[in-house]
Length: 89
Image 1 (cartoon, rainbow, N blue to C red):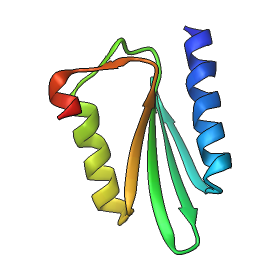
Image 2: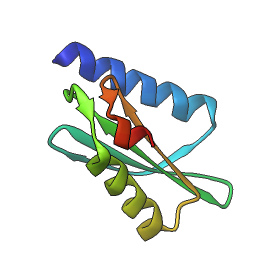
Image 3: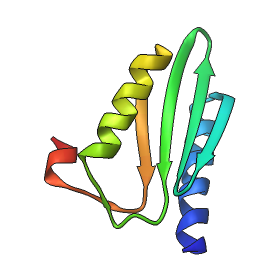
Image 4: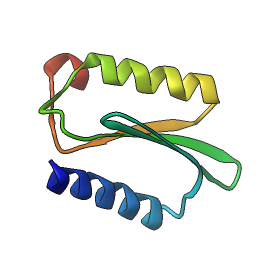
């Protein structure tokens, strides 16, 4: 469990670094960590999910709602799990 956590967190840190994003806020709740990011005038939301073998449509909907609520341009789910067919679609 801790290995997958570090892998997901490292992956998120690398994406944030290489896309030159700034962390405005970080919220941790159970197996999810939500990053609210910015670059120039654009806002982004990253949802990091740890310890879930499959990522379903509920996570995609949660990300969609966060992106709309925060007025972000884009959002991404970072995980080491697999996506269900519905979530990919």
